[in-house]
Structure formats: structure tokens, C-alpha cells
Length: 459
Image (tube, rainbow, N blue to C red):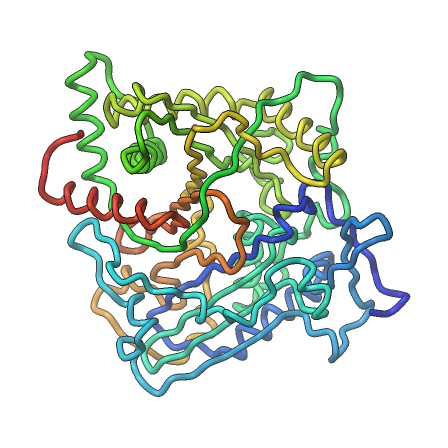
């Protein structure tokens, strides 16, 4: 990098230690053949516009060890905006031993994949960086674009290290990438967070510090997809048997409760369990809500804790879902969100890392993230890159240039915690869930899916 590089800051809650070892990829399945080079050119062009240039830069460490981003004043061949890789296969997607899992139809209800497909090779594994320090050593771009082409379909993976942005920030990138690709560059959003931390108004005062979080067992990456009607039935049926009051819970509450209860039954007794729910502050803090949140890519995630003692978990699915709803509503309120971020600012400044410590084992940590509000599938429109592919009778089901579904792939992830990330509904109405869980947890989840398919009880 040159001495006259443009230097951008890495904000306090973008640069803490755990995020520096977290690399994620969103892997999308398209029912059409896409022009890979057009996709790469559009992404490169986006990262030449305004402060989007921050994402084409390279991470650097300052003398105090903190991060910053260096961007060449003018594009250079030796400093590409993105890492781009394209694989072409002369055959349909169903003929590929790994990618064929994407074309499986799911209209029959809930299911898991018995033989777990490890999708990481489709997004550059094992050659991708494993940490920010890897990026620095390799002079590597922040954004990776991986396109796998078949004669009837395309897989598109977009990868990033978490200090660059959070999941909703990636949605903003995907939406603006789509605008550039489709000739609507004049509609691209101006980033409001590239140089200014949008959370700076919450910098710590003397408020009471927020409660702490967790560390847990080693991860094992697997994934499944499921639909919700059966879980809703189970939750309501169990609740009706124990209360005359109506059950007011969301899909997210029911899924979180189901996951927590299922994992609870895999542990030696007696154990308590704790749901650590990731919340996007764009929907909680007034300064981030609405239109202003559309051009924010920095990490503005917070978390809430639902401690569930053994008695609560054993009660019913409906009762567990209600407990989750109540704690999320209370702990994600505006005052609590403000307190959470002030505490994290202080903790990162003192220790270099965020506060994740639930310091009272034996509670079992379950990190739960519901991505429904991000609506990622609606953000992506690559119609201008379509060059061929399948033609279906139901054009609403398989829209031109729209992804049919997606999965989240963890290319690098901090050890010591079990995680479930629930995506938005795909074009067939399914909810895809990505998990990083222990093998015994996966065995339990498979049994539960099978049980729900044929046994009308709620444990």
C-alpha cells in the first residue's frame, strides 16, 4: 500500500477480537445461468463509488494494534477490489456431488440432510483467509465473490470478514450491487457509517453496566431446512393444555424455544439452558430505524439472554417460547439497547474484546439469530446477468435473476459455542436453518424432525 492511501477508521464494535476470527459467506442458488464476469464487474464498480471504496481497501494495524483500512486513491491492478473465483461445470447442477443438494425440492414438510454436505469448497475453502491477520498477511481483499456455473443453474457466494460489516450490512451491499448490475447506479445509497460511527452518540456514561453472556462447547458445522406449521401446532397445543390465555409468540420465539428444548434433552441432568439471541439494533434504536438504516453497514448487533432453568424447559414448547418472547422484549428495549452498547464500548476499550461471558455454567449456551427481517432473497436481483437456464411453468416461483434459496456458510468461526441461524422464507415458503452444533445435538434435532412428522405431541 502507498503512503498517500485514503485511510478509513474501523469502528470500536467492528474491530474487537472475536469478530476478527469470523468469516462468513452467503451462498445463493439461482435457477438460471448467470454471467460471472458481469457479476464481478458490477461488484468492482460498486466499490469505486463514494465511501463504498472502504470495502475495496486492505486492513492494517496501527501502532496500538487497532485496525484501520487503507484504500488506494486510484484503482491499481495489484490491489483488486474483490477476490473473484469462477468455476464452470459442463453439466446440470444435479450431476455435481455437492451442489446437487441445492436443487432438492422441499414441498413435503420438514427435513434434515442425513449426509451433511460441506459447502465450504463452493466458496473457496480451504484457501480463504481465516482471520483479519490472514487478510493483512496476504494483502487480501475484504470481499470474496465465488461463482460456480452449471448448464442449468448458478451458485453465487459472497464472503466477508465480520469487521467489515454485519449481516444486515451485507444485505445493503447485495442490494446496491444489484442496482449497479441492473444499470441503476444513480440509486446507489451513500454510506453514512464509513468514517463516522453511527453509535457514537451512545458512547459510555456512568450508567449501570449490562449483564454478561457466554462461552460454550466446540462447534460442528451442519445444516438443515424446516417449515414452521408443525412447530406452531405443537406450541399452541401444549399451551392450550396449560393455560386459558391466548399464546402471543412469533415464529422466531417458537424456533428458538424448539432449538433450546431439543438441545436441553441431549445434556446430562439436571442442566439449565440459556438462549443468547442476536438482535439488530437497526430495528431498536431510533437513530438507526427506517431509511437511515438502509445505508449502514457497520456492526450494530446486540444480544439478549433468556435463562431457562430445567423446570421451564420441561414445561411445554409454548411456555418456553413465551419466556423467550418476554426477555427479548424487555432486554431489547431502547433503554436496554443503549445500556448494552455503552457497556460494550467500555469493555472493548479496556480488553480489546466484547463481553460474551455468561459466567455461571452449567447453563448451556445456544446462540440464536433469526434473519427473517433481513429478507436477503428480496435484496438480490441479478437479472441483468442472466444468460440462460431453466424455464419453469410457475414464473412467480423462480423469478429471473432472483435466488431460489440460500445458506450461510461459516468459513472461520470462533470456537466454543453452539449456533443456529434461521434465514428468511425462500420462494417455496421454507425456512432454512444453518447450525454449528455438536454431533449429539444434530442427532437430537433429526429425531425431533422425524417425530414431528408423525407424532402429535409436544413432549
